[in-house]
Length: 421
Ligand code: AMP
Ligand code: GLY
Image 1 (cartoon, rainbow, N blue to C red):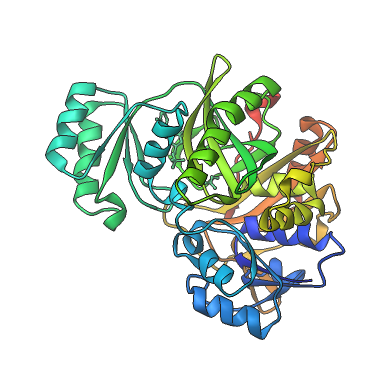
Image 2 (spheres, helix red, strand yellow):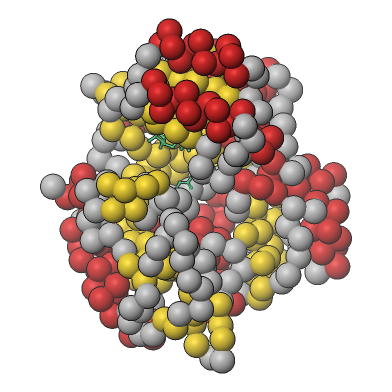
């Protein structure tokens, strides 16, 4: 079959790699893709936020199946437009993607479904929001309601910091995303990401992971899109996983069906776990980046069968074939990230890294200039390895990092520390 993946980061490179392991894939196109993806698939330039343009491309190129990587096309309704055009698609409708695109929507769904999450208030007015912060006190969490490219959450240690965050949000720093805010109780515990495929009715867990959001070792410094990840996450024991499915995932999916907007795609369940009890931090309507890289490394070619079954409503007949393995990915970023950083520095030594079912360097932001790979983003590479233990996976990933010659880049040397300590 002919398959189109929308997106161009490390997440989409890993999905492309997994899809190509499956003999069902005859032709693979990625839009827009990146220089690493171009090594293994065709790349097409296409406005991926324009559902009509994507549907037209699918017709012209006889695309049978579309996998939507990032949240922006989901929130823009690209999946709806493709379904109307009769194209098989992996990814939720615009209405169901509100589980990521609107925090107040998610809070109201959780309230109806009885899913445990932080206590909260929802505000469209600065004065009322300020009053709420003053009565609740700190620490407290201030969130822009809409999509803010991962930057719309402020964990405030003091009341003053929370009030300043409110001023910024209502002052328009996050555009319309901050015109409404959710203010949440600060939850303590250990975070983990739980990934569940949903075909509307059936939920099938496909793995757990832990991200490393802070830029610096020991989880210090500013927040990033994610500096590394590993799977599975030991904190997600079988008991915690079952509890998250029973108390959070299934009730929320049922509530989405009851509302007439069933959820189809991957549900990224961000959890805070304390004393064996998971509470919801947030949902995303897509795979995480870099969490996807470790999940794809572990799933391999079956990822395509599972995504197809999701799109066709056949998850009830599916099971995941798990190897007893671990995967770990180290993000290499351009110096300065998540702040100002340069583009265009040359990355050497990639050809010295092995490429097999245990080792892959996924490209997050690279371009090809005069035959060389150059940095073309903040997060640039996701150096990913698999092994029988997390120790082996980590050693393999860092051995690859050490072969890459890129003085203008950096990475955290402690990815996996919680599980390795
Ligand atoms: P998000 O952008 O929604 O993933 O939030 C970013 C990060 O903020 C999360 O990964 C958590 O570390 C933290 N966070 C969000 N909400 C809460 C909360 N209610 N309590 C504690 N930490 C939170
Ligand atoms: N790595 C976190 C995310 O993709 O949202």
